[in-house]
Amino acid sequence: MSDNPLLGTATRCFACGPENPIGLQIVFTLEDGACMGSFTPGKYHVGFNDTVHGGIIFSALDDVMANFLYLQGIKAFTARCEIRYRKALRVGQTIELTARVENERKRLATLKGEARLAETGDLVADATAAFMLE
Image 1 (cartoon, one colour):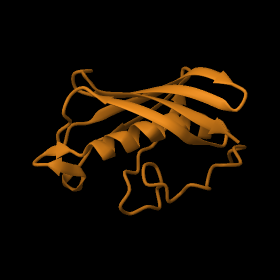
Image 2 (image 1 turned 180 degrees about the horizontal axis):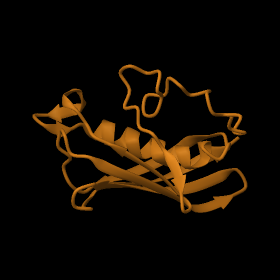
Image 3 (image 1 turned 135 degrees about the horizontal axis):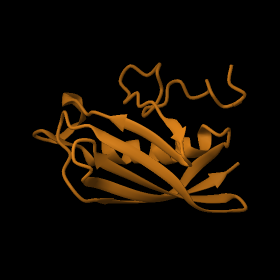
């Protein structure tokens, strides 16, 4: 049993909730000072033709950064997030998600997230977000 009091409280989260039947169901882990996960978009994640909707990529990046804190038992919420899209993501292409903390002071943590193509390592999008710690 985990000693993280938050685990089990977000089972219906759109990005990582295992009980959300329409969610992304990304599984996140902490490894070597980073939060990691992977996601393969399907036909219901498109914006145009077979190009994945930017909001889906944003959700995955926001959640990998939030899970860096969440998996350590730190309750927080996104205060601000800036994303830069660098390459189109197509249906069926797996992305590897990574997040690391850049700065933490008082009640604010700044994190950096990246989404890279699993096959080539090409950067699809990166984001920087500030999280308010509770």
